[in-house]
Amino acid sequence: VEELKKVKGVGDHTAVFLRMLPAVLGRYQGARTRLSAIINSPEEAYAWLEPYFFGARNEMVYVLCLDGKRQVLGVRKVAEGSIEMAEMNARRIAEEAMGLRAARVYVAHNHVSNLAIPSQADWLTTDTLRGALRPIGIELIDHLVFVDGDMVSLKDSEHLKGLQYV
Image (tube, rainbow, N blue to C red; front, side, top):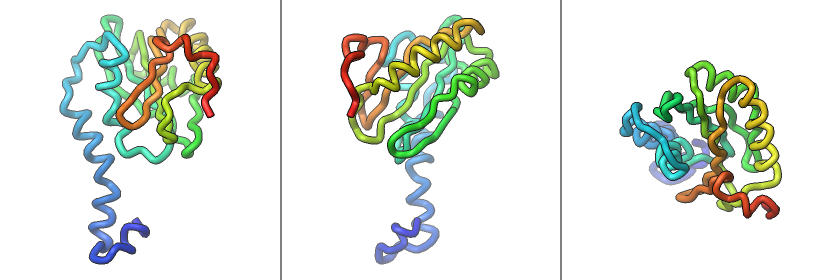
């Protein structure tokens, strides 16, 4: 807000409005979709989750919760980190999924660096989450990595597993 107010003609109200605009537009796009949607692919999950990452300046983690028939139950933000990382806490993800009575989940986070190649930490986190969620009856369908206008599915990208994200 302080940086925006340095621009000639931008006062307190305009700066606050401009700062809030990305979040408001993201919520608007998300609200336009119907909650009874069925998610059958990473591309459909991408379309559902993309508004949540719109304008993000830090890495954020969301969980898309589905019932046994893959119908959307809701989306929950489970972490926000820095420009370099966000911690994925298996307990928090499990709590949000169980709170919505989810049988399946997509976990998604963004890379602020505009490079969607999954890091070694992303692969390790995916394996850890899958192992933590399975015993409580929740299937981790996929882990999605978002960048502006693009997404990588770890499930569909097993061939990338050996590559290092720099």
